[in-house]
Image 1 (cartoon, rainbow, N blue to C red):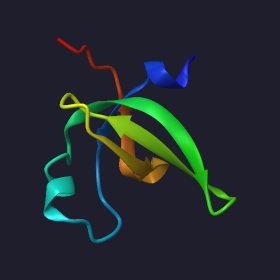
Image 2: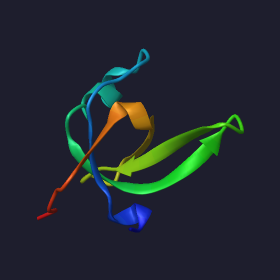
Image 3: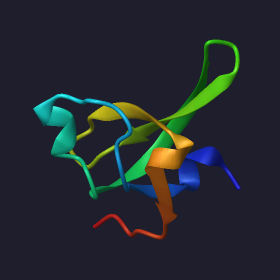
Image 4: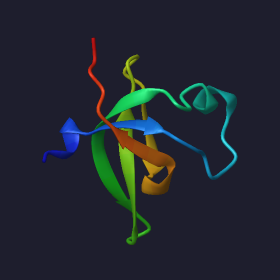
Amino acid sequence: MNVHDLNVKIKKLHKKYNRKLINYLYKPGVMAGKKTVNKKSTVYIIEFDDYTRIWFFQKELKFIKYQKN
């Protein structure tokens, strides 16, 4: 399965985030890619319907089936 075919929903945030980021909590998005940070942690880049891209840790995501209209 291609990483770009996965659909996700943000289920929880583990750090203090700004108010703009909280607006995306529980909203569905599409996985746009992934990135390795600090040579050991992998984060996933999620793209939302308004084309905003934000990275999250895997434990903050819930993988779902979502059809974009």
